[in-house]
Image (cartoon, rainbow, N blue to C red):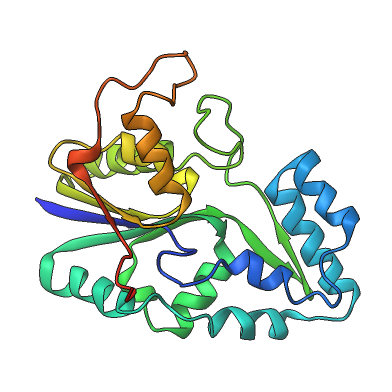
Length: 239
């Protein structure tokens, strides 16, 4: 019997949002034509537009990597993840709507990759100096998640596969901040715990669930309130 800790990446492991930081590197801001991609085609199309714009303007792989590598972790996060693995018998995975290249680059630079069992994110790879990103999957079964990535389904599939391989988790800890972290939290058992970053979107959504304001795709209000398993906190960031 082991334990499992699941982490979001942006605003959870790292202090900022990696996508937003990279988009802010475009001189003069993100072009309006790229912004429209978000409205019309979703976040993945928008980020591809950001990467295309940076490439056209001469920003290469080294430039992007250097920005990502030096993004600050949430205070105490590096030590926390290492201790969970080394001292408390936890497997640690990351489920993020960022992209695989950003996360791999950051983990490698911060000497944390060896402590992460798996990373689930939108696949991204450089073709020359242009970063190409794809959706993790395309889903239409979860209205709590984006079309390109349902964290709840990813978590459930991972746990199921681990069980088939003989790895059964006694307890699951989940840390996140955003709207797409609600689905996996609703799938936790009574013995599991969620650590929600205060003053971010997820805290607001949890309150709505407990007030019966959020329904699933079948128009059913969630019957089980989740407040008893939720820790609203600033993670390890000082007030």
